[in-house]
Length: 114
Image (cartoon, rainbow, N blue to C red; front, side, top):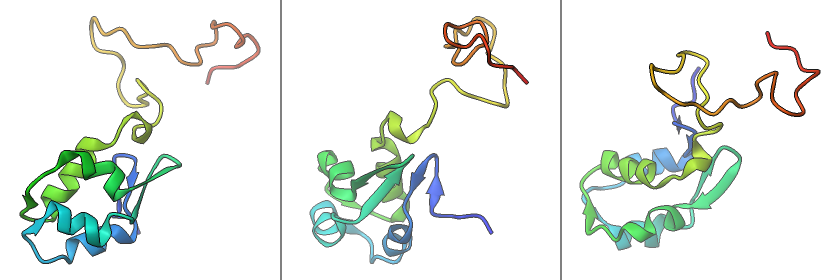
């Protein structure tokens, strides 16, 4: 069974259910007062809801989707994992991707490529 509380490298855990079940609309300050200390995990790092969306200073959220959108907009690079990594698509024409771990990079001489 997939874990529906994880999206784009962000783990909401029990906070997702809590936020989904709130009575909306809810004011930004009211949301943070009640749930600001709840934690959000991002690729091994943890932060609070208040630290994450507090700087937005929104008036209110109309539904869970707006709160989730605010969270996803405010997560930094720590939530995306390895930058420029994709095991599905090659670089687009003209795209200059960083070559992480390429066999010919310094310190990589003994590493095999599969």
